[in-house]
Image (cartoon, rainbow, N blue to C red; front, side, top):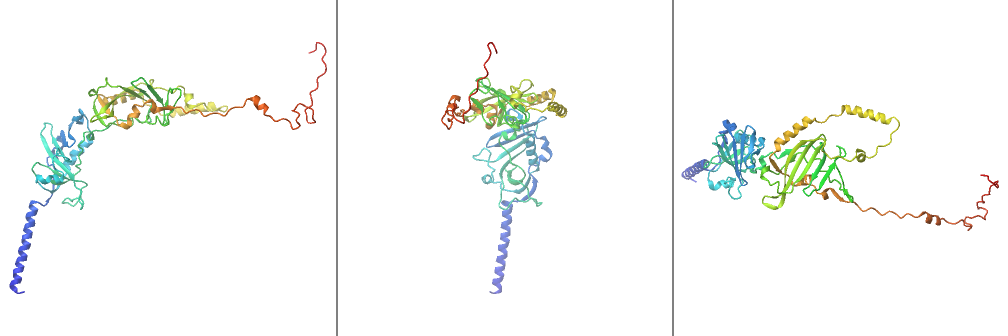
Amino acid sequence: MNEKTVKTLSIATGVAILGAILFNSLRDSNTAASSTDKPLVPALEKRVNDVRSIVIEGQEGSITLTGGAAGWALQEKSGYPANDTRARELLLALRDARRLEEKTADPARLGRLGLDAPDADESQSKRITLKDEGGETIASVLVGNRRFGKGGMAARPGGDRPDEQYYVLPEEGGPSYLTAGSLRVDGRAIGWLEQQFLDVGMDRIRAVRVAHPDGVVLEAVRPDMDANEMTVLDVPEGKVQKASSTASFPGALARLRFDDVQQESDLEWATNPLTTTEYFTEHGLVVVCESIELPKEGDPDQKVTWARFRFEVDPERAPALPEAEEAMGPEPPQEDGAEDAAEGETAEAGDDAPEGPTTAELQAEADELSAATSDWAYALPSWKTRSFRPAVDDLLEDAPEPEPQPEEVPEEDAATDTPPPADGSGGSGGGDDATPPKEDGPPKEDGGE
Protein backbone atom coordinates (compact mmCIF):
# COMPACT_ATOMS: atom_id res chain seq x y z
CA MET A 1 0.00 0.00 0.00
CA ASN A 2 1.59 3.28 -1.14
CA GLU A 3 1.68 6.55 0.77
CA LYS A 4 -1.10 8.11 -1.34
CA THR A 5 -3.51 5.27 -0.56
CA VAL A 6 -2.78 5.53 3.14
CA LYS A 7 -3.52 9.24 3.14
CA THR A 8 -6.76 8.65 1.25
CA LEU A 9 -7.94 6.04 3.77
CA SER A 10 -6.98 8.27 6.68
CA ILE A 11 -8.97 11.15 5.27
CA ALA A 12 -11.97 8.90 4.61
CA THR A 13 -11.86 7.52 8.15
CA GLY A 14 -11.68 11.02 9.62
CA VAL A 15 -14.65 12.13 7.53
CA ALA A 16 -16.65 9.09 8.66
CA ILE A 17 -15.89 9.77 12.31
CA LEU A 18 -16.75 13.44 11.93
CA GLY A 19 -19.99 12.50 10.20
CA ALA A 20 -20.92 10.11 12.99
CA ILE A 21 -20.29 12.77 15.59
CA LEU A 22 -22.39 15.29 13.72
CA PHE A 23 -25.17 12.72 13.20
CA ASN A 24 -25.30 11.77 16.86
CA SER A 25 -25.24 15.41 17.89
CA LEU A 26 -28.15 16.16 15.56
CA ARG A 27 -30.00 13.06 16.82
CA ASP A 28 -29.49 14.07 20.45
CA SER A 29 -30.88 17.53 19.84
CA ASN A 30 -34.00 16.17 18.14
CA THR A 31 -34.91 12.83 19.68
CA ALA A 32 -32.63 11.79 22.52
CA ALA A 33 -33.51 12.55 26.14
CA SER A 34 -31.82 15.49 27.75
CA SER A 35 -31.15 15.63 31.47
CA THR A 36 -32.67 18.30 33.66
CA ASP A 37 -33.54 18.83 37.30
CA LYS A 38 -36.16 21.53 37.03
CA PRO A 39 -39.42 21.46 39.01
CA LEU A 40 -42.34 19.81 37.26
CA VAL A 41 -44.73 22.63 38.21
CA PRO A 42 -42.67 25.76 38.89
CA ALA A 43 -45.73 27.81 39.89
CA LEU A 44 -46.37 25.57 42.93
CA GLU A 45 -43.11 26.48 44.60
CA LYS A 46 -44.69 29.77 45.66
CA ARG A 47 -48.42 29.11 45.22
CA VAL A 48 -49.05 25.68 46.72
CA ASN A 49 -51.10 27.27 49.53
CA ASP A 50 -53.24 29.17 47.02
CA VAL A 51 -54.82 25.99 45.62
CA ARG A 52 -58.52 25.82 46.44
CA SER A 53 -59.67 23.29 43.84
CA ILE A 54 -58.20 20.02 42.57
CA VAL A 55 -59.87 18.51 39.50
CA ILE A 56 -58.90 14.94 38.57
CA GLU A 57 -60.03 13.54 35.20
CA GLY A 58 -59.69 9.87 34.30
CA GLN A 59 -61.50 6.85 32.91
CA GLU A 60 -63.68 6.78 36.04
CA GLY A 61 -64.92 10.30 35.27
CA SER A 62 -64.12 13.64 36.84
CA ILE A 63 -63.92 14.45 40.56
CA THR A 64 -63.43 17.81 42.23
CA LEU A 65 -61.90 18.44 45.64
CA THR A 66 -62.60 21.85 47.12
CA GLY A 67 -60.58 23.30 49.99
CA GLY A 68 -61.59 25.76 52.66
CA ALA A 69 -61.25 26.64 56.32
CA ALA A 70 -62.99 23.38 57.33
CA GLY A 71 -60.71 21.24 55.16
CA TRP A 72 -61.19 19.48 51.83
CA ALA A 73 -64.53 18.18 50.58
CA LEU A 74 -65.63 16.08 47.60
CA GLN A 75 -68.06 17.89 45.34
CA GLU A 76 -69.39 14.69 43.71
CA LYS A 77 -70.47 13.38 47.13
CA SER A 78 -72.49 16.46 48.10
CA GLY A 79 -69.53 18.03 49.87
CA TYR A 80 -68.77 15.06 52.15
CA PRO A 81 -65.44 15.66 53.98
CA ALA A 82 -62.45 14.41 52.02
CA ASN A 83 -59.24 12.99 53.40
CA ASP A 84 -57.23 16.14 54.10
CA THR A 85 -53.96 14.22 54.35
CA ARG A 86 -54.28 12.69 50.88
CA ALA A 87 -55.20 16.01 49.27
CA ARG A 88 -52.24 17.74 50.91
CA GLU A 89 -49.88 14.91 49.94
CA LEU A 90 -50.88 15.26 46.28
CA LEU A 91 -50.18 19.00 46.28
CA LEU A 92 -46.80 18.55 47.92
CA ALA A 93 -45.90 15.71 45.55
CA LEU A 94 -46.65 17.94 42.55
CA ARG A 95 -44.65 20.78 44.08
CA ASP A 96 -41.63 18.56 44.79
CA ALA A 97 -41.68 16.54 41.54
CA ARG A 98 -38.64 17.09 39.28
CA ARG A 99 -38.16 16.74 35.54
CA LEU A 100 -35.45 14.14 34.96
CA GLU A 101 -35.38 13.67 31.19
CA GLU A 102 -37.09 15.38 28.31
CA LYS A 103 -39.02 12.95 26.12
CA THR A 104 -41.09 13.15 22.96
CA ALA A 105 -43.40 15.95 21.98
CA ASP A 106 -44.87 14.02 19.06
CA PRO A 107 -48.63 13.50 19.75
CA ALA A 108 -48.52 10.21 17.82
CA ARG A 109 -45.96 8.81 20.26
CA LEU A 110 -47.37 10.09 23.54
CA GLY A 111 -49.69 7.09 23.83
CA ARG A 112 -46.67 4.81 24.27
CA LEU A 113 -45.91 6.66 27.49
CA GLY A 114 -49.51 6.46 28.69
CA LEU A 115 -50.07 10.12 27.88
CA ASP A 116 -53.14 9.79 25.70
CA ALA A 117 -56.27 11.73 26.68
CA PRO A 118 -58.01 10.55 29.88
CA ASP A 119 -61.26 9.86 27.98
CA ALA A 120 -59.54 7.78 25.27
CA ASP A 121 -60.33 4.07 25.11
CA GLU A 122 -58.48 2.11 27.81
CA SER A 123 -56.54 5.20 28.85
CA GLN A 124 -54.81 5.06 32.23
CA SER A 125 -53.73 8.70 32.33
CA LYS A 126 -54.93 11.26 34.88
CA ARG A 127 -55.20 14.98 34.22
CA ILE A 128 -54.76 17.11 37.35
CA THR A 129 -55.86 20.72 37.24
CA LEU A 130 -55.20 23.09 40.14
CA LYS A 131 -57.18 26.31 40.57
CA ASP A 132 -57.09 29.20 43.01
CA GLU A 133 -59.95 30.75 44.96
CA GLY A 134 -61.04 32.81 41.96
CA GLY A 135 -61.20 29.77 39.68
CA GLU A 136 -58.04 30.67 37.74
CA THR A 137 -55.86 27.72 36.71
CA ILE A 138 -52.53 27.59 38.52
CA ALA A 139 -51.30 24.47 36.73
CA SER A 140 -52.51 21.47 34.74
CA VAL A 141 -50.49 18.30 34.13
CA LEU A 142 -51.18 14.95 32.50
CA VAL A 143 -49.71 11.97 34.37
CA GLY A 144 -49.05 8.82 32.35
CA ASN A 145 -47.34 5.48 32.92
CA ARG A 146 -45.05 4.71 35.77
CA ARG A 147 -41.57 3.80 34.55
CA PHE A 148 -40.32 0.28 35.21
CA GLY A 149 -37.12 0.10 33.14
CA LYS A 150 -34.82 -2.89 32.95
CA GLY A 151 -31.87 -0.70 33.88
CA GLY A 152 -33.60 0.57 37.02
CA MET A 153 -34.67 4.08 37.80
CA ALA A 154 -33.08 6.96 35.96
CA ALA A 155 -30.88 9.05 38.22
CA ARG A 156 -31.15 12.76 38.84
CA PRO A 157 -28.15 14.83 37.74
CA GLY A 158 -27.09 14.79 41.39
CA GLY A 159 -26.83 11.00 41.28
CA ASP A 160 -29.69 9.95 43.64
CA ARG A 161 -32.40 7.61 42.41
CA PRO A 162 -35.97 8.54 43.39
CA ASP A 163 -38.47 5.93 44.52
CA GLU A 164 -41.03 6.61 41.78
CA GLN A 165 -40.82 7.89 38.22
CA TYR A 166 -43.67 8.76 35.86
CA TYR A 167 -44.06 10.08 32.34
CA VAL A 168 -45.74 13.48 32.54
CA LEU A 169 -46.92 16.08 30.04
CA PRO A 170 -46.70 19.41 31.91
CA GLU A 171 -48.07 21.64 29.14
CA GLU A 172 -50.31 20.99 26.16
CA GLY A 173 -48.24 20.90 22.96
CA GLY A 174 -44.94 20.82 24.85
CA PRO A 175 -42.53 17.94 25.33
CA SER A 176 -43.18 15.15 27.81
CA TYR A 177 -40.81 14.35 30.66
CA LEU A 178 -39.68 11.46 32.75
CA THR A 179 -40.45 12.85 36.18
CA ALA A 180 -39.39 11.90 39.71
CA GLY A 181 -42.17 12.09 42.27
CA SER A 182 -44.97 10.22 44.03
CA LEU A 183 -47.59 10.92 41.38
CA ARG A 184 -49.84 7.88 41.70
CA VAL A 185 -53.32 9.44 41.50
CA ASP A 186 -56.56 7.72 42.47
CA GLY A 187 -59.32 8.50 39.98
CA ARG A 188 -62.09 7.00 42.15
CA ALA A 189 -64.22 9.35 44.20
CA ILE A 190 -64.28 6.90 47.14
CA GLY A 191 -60.49 6.91 47.19
CA TRP A 192 -60.45 10.52 48.40
CA LEU A 193 -62.78 9.99 51.36
CA GLU A 194 -62.04 8.92 54.91
CA GLN A 195 -64.14 5.76 54.88
CA GLN A 196 -64.02 5.04 58.61
CA PHE A 197 -66.83 7.08 60.16
CA LEU A 198 -67.58 5.40 63.49
CA ASP A 199 -65.56 3.64 66.17
CA VAL A 200 -67.28 2.35 69.30
CA GLY A 201 -65.04 -0.35 70.75
CA MET A 202 -66.25 -3.90 71.23
CA ASP A 203 -65.26 -3.72 74.91
CA ARG A 204 -68.10 -1.21 75.47
CA ILE A 205 -71.09 -3.03 73.95
CA ARG A 206 -73.37 -4.63 76.53
CA ALA A 207 -76.53 -5.49 74.57
CA VAL A 208 -78.26 -5.25 71.20
CA ARG A 209 -81.89 -5.04 70.09
CA VAL A 210 -83.02 -5.60 66.47
CA ALA A 211 -86.55 -4.66 65.39
CA HIS A 212 -87.48 -5.98 61.94
CA PRO A 213 -90.21 -4.38 59.82
CA ASP A 214 -92.40 -7.51 60.20
CA GLY A 215 -92.57 -6.97 63.97
CA VAL A 216 -89.96 -9.57 64.96
CA VAL A 217 -87.70 -8.30 67.75
CA LEU A 218 -84.42 -9.97 68.69
CA GLU A 219 -82.49 -9.12 71.84
CA ALA A 220 -79.12 -10.33 73.07
CA VAL A 221 -77.09 -9.47 76.16
CA ARG A 222 -73.54 -10.13 77.24
CA PRO A 223 -73.56 -12.21 80.42
CA ASP A 224 -70.38 -10.36 81.39
CA MET A 225 -68.22 -7.80 79.59
CA ASP A 226 -65.39 -10.27 79.02
CA ALA A 227 -67.61 -12.67 77.09
CA ASN A 228 -67.23 -12.83 73.31
CA GLU A 229 -70.76 -14.16 72.83
CA MET A 230 -74.10 -12.74 73.88
CA THR A 231 -77.09 -14.58 75.28
CA VAL A 232 -80.20 -14.37 73.10
CA LEU A 233 -83.30 -13.55 75.16
CA ASP A 234 -86.77 -15.09 74.93
CA VAL A 235 -85.75 -18.11 72.87
CA PRO A 236 -88.97 -19.86 71.75
CA GLU A 237 -89.71 -23.41 72.86
CA GLY A 238 -88.13 -25.93 70.53
CA LYS A 239 -85.31 -23.54 69.55
CA VAL A 240 -81.76 -23.08 70.86
CA GLN A 241 -79.10 -20.46 70.23
CA LYS A 242 -76.61 -21.27 67.48
CA ALA A 243 -72.96 -21.47 68.43
CA SER A 244 -71.03 -18.25 67.65
CA SER A 245 -74.19 -16.66 66.25
CA THR A 246 -73.74 -13.41 68.23
CA ALA A 247 -69.94 -13.11 68.02
CA SER A 248 -70.18 -10.26 65.49
CA PHE A 249 -72.39 -8.04 67.68
CA PRO A 250 -69.79 -6.62 70.13
CA GLY A 251 -67.49 -5.48 67.31
CA ALA A 252 -70.14 -4.25 64.87
CA LEU A 253 -69.38 -0.56 65.52
CA ALA A 254 -65.60 -0.82 65.92
CA ARG A 255 -63.70 0.96 63.12
CA LEU A 256 -66.85 0.92 60.98
CA ARG A 257 -66.26 1.89 57.34
CA PHE A 258 -68.58 2.60 54.43
CA ASP A 259 -68.48 1.54 50.79
CA ASP A 260 -70.32 4.66 49.64
CA VAL A 261 -71.97 7.75 51.09
CA GLN A 262 -74.68 10.19 50.09
CA GLN A 263 -77.09 12.60 51.71
CA GLU A 264 -79.79 10.95 53.78
CA SER A 265 -82.52 12.97 52.04
CA ASP A 266 -81.61 11.42 48.67
CA LEU A 267 -82.95 8.00 49.75
CA GLU A 268 -86.58 6.85 50.08
CA TRP A 269 -86.74 5.82 53.73
CA ALA A 270 -90.52 5.92 54.09
CA THR A 271 -91.26 3.59 51.17
CA ASN A 272 -88.76 0.83 52.03
CA PRO A 273 -88.94 -1.70 54.90
CA LEU A 274 -86.92 -0.28 57.77
CA THR A 275 -84.89 -2.30 60.27
CA THR A 276 -83.90 -0.58 63.52
CA THR A 277 -80.85 -1.87 65.39
CA GLU A 278 -79.90 -0.46 68.79
CA TYR A 279 -76.49 -1.01 70.38
CA PHE A 280 -76.20 -0.32 74.11
CA THR A 281 -72.90 0.42 75.77
CA GLU A 282 -72.18 -0.61 79.33
CA HIS A 283 -72.68 2.88 80.75
CA GLY A 284 -75.61 4.21 78.73
CA LEU A 285 -74.61 5.41 75.24
CA VAL A 286 -77.17 4.16 72.70
CA VAL A 287 -76.27 3.89 69.01
CA VAL A 288 -79.41 3.66 66.87
CA CYS A 289 -79.00 2.42 63.29
CA GLU A 290 -81.89 2.49 60.82
CA SER A 291 -81.24 0.57 57.61
CA ILE A 292 -82.91 -0.27 54.31
CA GLU A 293 -81.92 -2.47 51.39
CA LEU A 294 -81.82 -0.99 47.88
CA PRO A 295 -80.70 -2.38 44.49
CA LYS A 296 -77.07 -1.71 43.66
CA GLU A 297 -76.55 0.96 41.02
CA GLY A 298 -75.75 -0.74 37.73
CA ASP A 299 -76.51 -4.21 39.13
CA PRO A 300 -80.13 -4.43 40.37
CA ASP A 301 -79.74 -8.12 41.24
CA GLN A 302 -77.47 -7.17 44.14
CA LYS A 303 -78.66 -5.39 47.28
CA VAL A 304 -76.91 -2.63 49.20
CA THR A 305 -77.61 -1.90 52.87
CA TRP A 306 -77.91 1.85 53.45
CA ALA A 307 -77.84 3.04 57.06
CA ARG A 308 -78.34 6.25 58.98
CA PHE A 309 -77.35 6.75 62.62
CA ARG A 310 -78.34 8.70 65.69
CA PHE A 311 -76.90 8.72 69.21
CA GLU A 312 -78.64 9.00 72.57
CA VAL A 313 -77.84 8.61 76.26
CA ASP A 314 -80.22 6.36 78.23
CA PRO A 315 -78.72 4.00 80.84
CA GLU A 316 -82.12 2.42 81.60
CA ARG A 317 -83.15 1.35 78.08
CA ALA A 318 -80.87 -1.60 77.50
CA PRO A 319 -82.32 -5.13 77.66
CA ALA A 320 -80.98 -7.28 80.49
CA LEU A 321 -80.77 -10.90 81.47
CA PRO A 322 -83.80 -11.99 83.56
CA GLU A 323 -81.80 -12.71 86.71
CA ALA A 324 -78.11 -12.38 87.42
CA GLU A 325 -78.21 -15.59 89.44
CA GLU A 326 -79.83 -17.37 86.53
CA ALA A 327 -77.16 -16.24 84.12
CA MET A 328 -74.19 -16.94 86.38
CA GLY A 329 -75.53 -20.10 88.03
CA PRO A 330 -75.93 -20.87 91.75
CA GLU A 331 -73.19 -19.72 94.08
CA PRO A 332 -71.05 -22.44 95.63
CA PRO A 333 -71.58 -23.08 99.37
CA GLN A 334 -69.30 -21.07 101.63
CA GLU A 335 -67.74 -21.95 104.93
CA ASP A 336 -68.59 -20.06 108.09
CA GLY A 337 -67.09 -16.58 107.97
CA ALA A 338 -66.33 -16.76 104.23
CA GLU A 339 -69.36 -14.64 103.35
CA ASP A 340 -68.20 -11.76 105.54
CA ALA A 341 -64.71 -11.96 104.07
CA ALA A 342 -66.07 -11.91 100.52
CA GLU A 343 -68.15 -8.83 101.27
CA GLY A 344 -65.05 -7.07 102.60
CA GLU A 345 -63.05 -7.98 99.47
CA THR A 346 -65.85 -6.70 97.23
CA ALA A 347 -66.02 -3.38 99.01
CA GLU A 348 -62.25 -2.98 98.87
CA ALA A 349 -62.13 -3.84 95.17
CA GLY A 350 -64.97 -1.44 94.48
CA ASP A 351 -62.97 1.42 95.98
CA ASP A 352 -60.20 0.93 93.40
CA ALA A 353 -62.42 -0.05 90.44
CA PRO A 354 -62.29 2.48 87.57
CA GLU A 355 -65.45 4.49 87.15
CA GLY A 356 -67.20 4.74 83.80
CA PRO A 357 -67.85 7.96 81.89
CA THR A 358 -70.27 10.42 83.44
CA THR A 359 -73.62 11.23 81.87
CA ALA A 360 -72.23 14.59 80.76
CA GLU A 361 -69.26 12.91 79.08
CA LEU A 362 -71.53 10.43 77.31
CA GLN A 363 -73.78 13.27 76.12
CA ALA A 364 -70.75 15.14 74.75
CA GLU A 365 -69.72 12.00 72.87
CA ALA A 366 -73.23 11.54 71.47
CA ASP A 367 -73.33 15.17 70.32
CA GLU A 368 -69.97 14.87 68.59
CA LEU A 369 -70.96 11.67 66.78
CA SER A 370 -74.29 13.19 65.76
CA ALA A 371 -72.59 16.25 64.31
CA ALA A 372 -70.29 14.07 62.20
CA THR A 373 -72.93 11.68 60.85
CA SER A 374 -76.26 13.56 60.77
CA ASP A 375 -77.75 14.12 57.31
CA TRP A 376 -75.63 11.32 55.82
CA ALA A 377 -76.47 7.78 54.73
CA TYR A 378 -73.78 5.12 54.51
CA ALA A 379 -73.57 2.04 52.31
CA LEU A 380 -72.36 -0.67 54.70
CA PRO A 381 -70.00 -3.43 53.55
CA SER A 382 -71.91 -6.58 52.62
CA TRP A 383 -70.11 -8.65 55.25
CA LYS A 384 -71.44 -6.31 57.95
CA THR A 385 -75.11 -6.87 57.04
CA ARG A 386 -75.60 -9.74 59.48
CA SER A 387 -74.36 -7.57 62.36
CA PHE A 388 -77.09 -4.98 61.71
CA ARG A 389 -79.92 -7.01 60.17
CA PRO A 390 -79.74 -10.57 61.57
CA ALA A 391 -82.65 -12.87 60.83
CA VAL A 392 -84.07 -15.29 63.40
CA ASP A 393 -82.46 -18.20 61.58
CA ASP A 394 -79.08 -16.48 61.90
CA LEU A 395 -79.28 -16.73 65.69
CA LEU A 396 -81.48 -19.73 66.47
CA GLU A 397 -81.89 -23.30 65.30
CA ASP A 398 -84.15 -26.26 66.13
CA ALA A 399 -83.37 -27.91 69.42
CA PRO A 400 -81.87 -31.40 69.00
CA GLU A 401 -84.15 -34.40 69.52
CA PRO A 402 -83.77 -35.82 73.06
CA GLU A 403 -81.81 -39.08 73.23
CA PRO A 404 -83.94 -42.18 74.06
CA GLN A 405 -83.65 -43.26 77.70
CA PRO A 406 -83.27 -46.96 78.72
CA GLU A 407 -86.52 -48.58 79.89
CA GLU A 408 -86.92 -48.86 83.69
CA VAL A 409 -87.83 -52.29 85.11
CA PRO A 410 -90.92 -52.19 87.45
CA GLU A 411 -90.20 -53.12 91.08
CA GLU A 412 -92.61 -56.10 91.13
CA ASP A 413 -90.92 -57.51 88.04
CA ALA A 414 -87.54 -57.03 89.67
CA ALA A 415 -88.71 -59.00 92.77
CA THR A 416 -89.83 -62.01 90.69
CA ASP A 417 -86.46 -62.15 89.07
CA THR A 418 -84.79 -62.99 92.42
CA PRO A 419 -83.53 -66.62 92.26
CA PRO A 420 -85.11 -69.15 94.75
CA PRO A 421 -83.06 -70.66 97.60
CA ALA A 422 -80.81 -73.60 96.74
CA ASP A 423 -82.89 -76.20 98.72
CA GLY A 424 -85.98 -75.44 96.71
CA SER A 425 -87.94 -74.53 99.78
CA GLY A 426 -88.97 -71.27 98.30
CA GLY A 427 -87.54 -69.44 101.35
CA SER A 428 -90.51 -70.41 103.64
CA GLY A 429 -88.76 -72.58 106.25
CA GLY A 430 -88.32 -76.34 106.88
CA GLY A 431 -84.62 -76.67 106.30
CA ASP A 432 -81.66 -76.36 108.62
CA ASP A 433 -80.76 -73.03 107.06
CA ALA A 434 -84.30 -71.75 107.24
CA THR A 435 -85.00 -68.80 109.44
CA PRO A 436 -86.89 -70.03 112.54
CA PRO A 437 -90.41 -68.69 112.92
CA LYS A 438 -90.91 -65.87 115.35
CA GLU A 439 -92.42 -67.03 118.59
CA ASP A 440 -95.64 -65.56 119.83
CA GLY A 441 -95.42 -63.38 122.91
CA PRO A 442 -97.06 -64.23 126.25
CA PRO A 443 -100.84 -64.19 126.31
CA LYS A 444 -102.30 -60.87 127.21
CA GLU A 445 -104.77 -60.39 129.98
CA ASP A 446 -108.25 -59.28 129.21
CA GLY A 447 -108.32 -55.57 128.64
CA GLY A 448 -104.55 -55.29 128.61
CA GLU A 449 -102.86 -53.18 126.04
